[in-house]
Amino acid sequence: MPITKTNEPSGSQYEKTTQRRAPSTRARRVKRVINNGLEAFGCLVLPLLYRCYIFIVWSTSRTTDNYAERYDPFTQKFGGLVAMIWHQEVVTAPHIFRDRKVHTLASLNTMGRLITALLENHDFRVFRGGRRKRIVLKDMIRYLHQNPDVVYGITVDGSRGPARRMKRGSCLLAKGSGAPLFAVCTRARHCLYAPSWDETAVPLPFNRIDTYALGPYWIDPKCDSETFDAFCTHIEQELLSLTDFIDRKVKNGRIDARVRKDFPETWQADRWPEGTLGTPFTEWDLQYENAPPWSKASESASE
Image: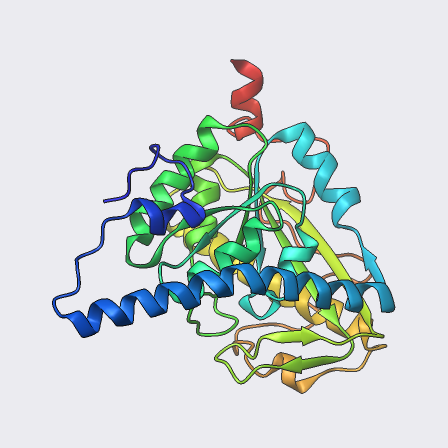
């Protein structure tokens, strides 16, 4: 069992503080030593390679980002929030969320260890999940209650898909903590796509890259299951619509069939009224001035 502080993100300390069953044979012990060495080497090299590559991409590209002007003041005024992105955008996420002490979730396998090292290099704090996801989700909710100004960044269709199908972890975080949700999307005009389940997008240099944050969306912690189901469906549609909007924006109005191919049949194009972004689910949604009385921010103000 990990020897970590209750509810705290363990990050790269997970491997150091978790007792693993000793290999039964000498060959397996040697194999573990080699694997641990390779993983440790990867944890040193991957963050450096990523920083070099993403610096070249951003310094040679035309970028726009409403994240700072919307996200940062909102976090300072109302406390924590939950940011949602598609797993396809994991390459740009560390750079977009850098230096904001974002908290997130990574698996317990080798890839999770490498990703954790990369994220921590960008000032993230990482909970480790895998088969413990239900337990970790409860820890994350308690942690959000206990700490001010916590921002969670969640890949809502990760870590194994299916692509563009939102799992409910981010909505459960919002419901359990009274924090709002934000949909965040980054799209580049020119990308390479990895041969993975989500076709991870790797932006190229000399590009146009846009990032947009849309929210807040609020869900009452005391809502019934039917309302929660409707809310989850609504949020998935909003994130899909934001993805389509930003992708067409960076590609001068062109509809990219590759982007839309994993959209569910229930998605409706042009669901937003002309000239607006987003559709509210509650009377509090998409407002930056007021928070509902049951929100995390209101709880903090009343204490």
